[in-house]
Amino acid sequence: MKRFDNERLMKIGELVITVKLMSLVFFAVAVFVEIPILVKDSYTLLKMNFSYVQYQTIIACVVLSLLFILLLFLAEYYKKRYNEKNLENKKYIVYDVTETVIFLLLDTLLILLSGANESPYKIIFFFIMISVTIQHGVKYGLIVSAASSAIVLAIDLIKAPVKPNTFFQIDLILVGSFLIVTWLVGYYRSVEAQYSSKMSNLANRDDLTGLYSHGYFQSALSNMINQAESNGKPISLLFIDIDYFKYFNDLYGHQIGDEVLKEIGARISSHLKPSHIAARYGGEEFTVIMYDTAEADAVRFAETIRKDIEKTFDKKYNEVKKITVSIGIGCYPTKAKNKDELIKCADDALYRAKSFHRNRVETFQSVLEELKSDIVEEDDMSIINSMKTLIGVINSKDKYTYRHIERVVVYCGIIADALKINDKDKKILKYGAYLHDIGKINIPEEILNKKMPLTKEEWDMLKQHPAYGVDIVSPVKSLVDSIPIILHHHERYDGGGYPTGLAGEQIPYLARVLTVADCFDAMTSNRPYSIARSVEDAIGELIACSSTQFDPEIVEAFVGVLRDNNNIF
Image (cartoon, rainbow, N blue to C red; front, side, top):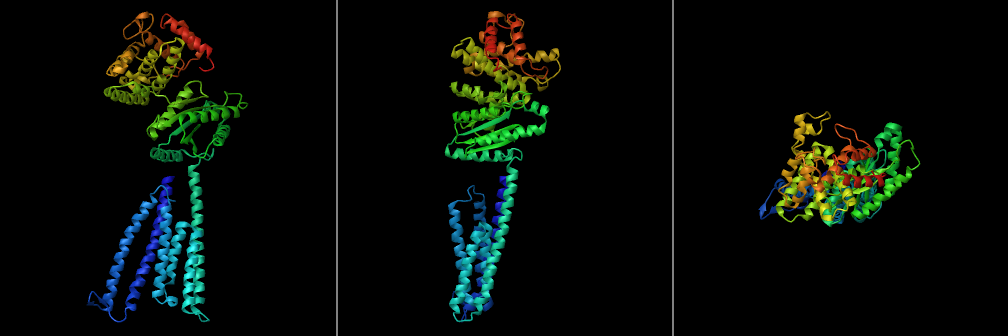
């Protein structure tokens, strides 16, 4: 909508320029006619005698040349002006006042030189009055109209002080016309501005919630990023999504669902500060832009909204799970360097919140960014950037793999804490968990997303992904300790796994940890060829396969955490 507002302002600017140029053309015509009349004795220029017509022609050429130069100046000035972000800049106000005064003085001079009270050019004041009214509104237009009227009537009184003053009486009608025309133009301008504002508001606002629209959000975020870039302020972006809302709509219907959306929009609005912008991003998803807000403050704000919404719907709609929201937070410039990265960070953080029990606030966390901080060699940094691109490709090919990786990293951290693994090995495990499926970049998309059982040839191809992953990771010296995890995370404790058939203690310990986390997430997630199982079913499967597929010590530790924190999982 901002683009259309700018176009509208440009059109108004073009109209103002046109009126002012018409005024200058009228002025030039008057000069063309009047100056030769004033020079009654001779028409001499640079010691050359000219006829009346020649003299008029020279004056016309000079005046028209000056007008053309002025036209170029005005066109360039207003083009630059209406592309300026801050149209209320004080320098423009000073320019407008100065320009108006100059036009009034020129018009007054023309009238005085062309017969004063008898001048036929008094209507030239219409141009400046109309242009000021179009540009600044009826209030300023009436001020200029009053000044013009005072000039005309003052000339009449000074030039013909005797009574009755015929010119004064006639000019009273002209002055009345000044005021009426100015008011009519100003009234039309006011009505146009009001309707334009209403249309802009309709386009910028979501009808249901009253929050800003998706389009306005995109424009506002771009402007805020530009502003933050110039003054070094942080921006936090919240993505807010209603948990299980599709199920709620199916049960209660979209009309009740709309009431919930409206109420949540109101709850979000009630917590906003002047520097915040809230919008309905789409469907059941909302967003809040928080200018000059660091991540820690954004987390506290998000928690306030989450708790308020949970409390608001605590006693309602008991047939379904409570109406709650999950919130993801991205931050500029600490976690993202531009608008697109900031939106992706907030979206990834939201997915993280929804992946773990929902009704929670999560900030964006990037294992690769953490890895970059540990890297010393420049060559390793370029490879890590390439890996980031590869993971993005995997995301586009296979949404399950991308989201699965995020959850497995968290599960590995939980198991590592339960087993009291040292910080160095926890970091190695985290990097291995994050990159364990990167080799799937070489697996065709139709195999990754196939809903039917894989053929033997397809299965053999899929089993190559650990080796492919090692090929990708091995050039990075900082990841050398994670290579065994990536290569052996599909080995079985009884030796029946792949790619090398290692068994028991032969399998690297951290790879055994990843195997448990990997399989637990696979069992509790919807996949192209299977439906998610409950946590209790997954626990039963872990126990049943202990000592055959999984290391029993690791299973025991993880199951203990799952049962102690069942409400989280």
